[in-house]
Length: 447
Image 1 (cartoon, rainbow, N blue to C red):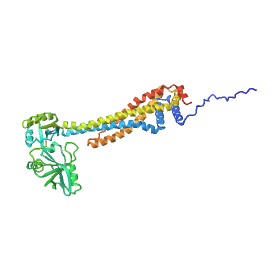
Image 2: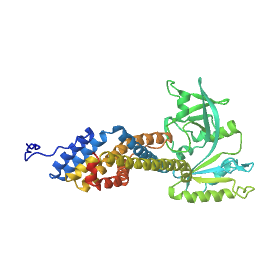
Image 3: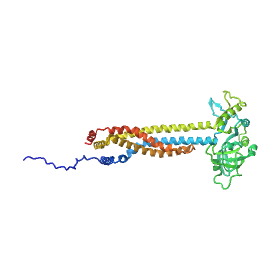
Image 4: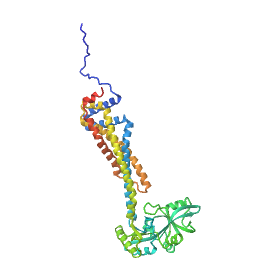
């Protein structure tokens, strides 16, 4: 008797059994089958299936996905930090120019020591007579000479190291100061050099403390002289003078603090921003008539506008901005290379899944879009985290530099635009590579 192999008949609905696959591949295969069922329905369903599959693939390797996105959100955070700093600096400059854009500063010239310049103002060359001469320059609407000294002020049992500035009546309008209590120095006070003082907000807070009642009329001691408190200033957010200042009449400072015929600075206010450059030139011409040039042939005074002061102050912000942008560029490049590397590793791990997709009818563009969406989701997650971290960095920097914290639509758009660009730039090569895999070779990889 011949032995014949017996074969069980297959029903017409029977399909060959698929090889046993790991759990991660089984999950991906289920996502694929769901995607293929929905493809014929509508494009939105296909996109939803792709996004769901991408999220599933990324969730299987959470730690790896997080580390891959690390470079992205550090780079985005640096970009947002630099952007908020720049926008805050622009707003600060705008506020300053609106408030004090008509201010012009006259300082003494520069001395040299061992061949090294000591900087503007180190040479005492300005006198009250110079201020009187400048007062007749066209378009000048306010002028104040200034004498500055660092002193210990005492109020009751409280003492505080502060800056004492001797000023004239016009200083209040030139600096656009605001009072919380009391009044500014009167014309009689400044003409007579009375022992009267107006406290800046920081000086008042540290000297007056929690004292009950109004300080107006009380006395603060500076050196051996008592000064009656005439007023307390509001916290200043613009201007070159800090809040840790006590203002007294110029003549009082000249006689009781420095005993000198010279002044440290002269502040001038023009009638309009359009007149500032003209006034600056006129002041220079006027002072040259009474001032002799130094031994080096230069003027013994310096005339600057408030715009020039802001430009010099803004150099530090520009350096910081360039530093943050440089860090952002490096981080985004590293993050992009990480995205590319992780996608190539993912393709290697899921090559069997890709083969199944192609064998069941997935188009090359479906495979390409699948991996592009994974890269995009990864970058967008990094972008969202980077946005939040960048806003915190921007808040810290703007607070440190005492400039406004500004959030614009650009601030919110940039993280997502940068993330999408990184995903496309560094994810397109792995996605195209995955879409061009040979399905036969891909299926054999699981054997």
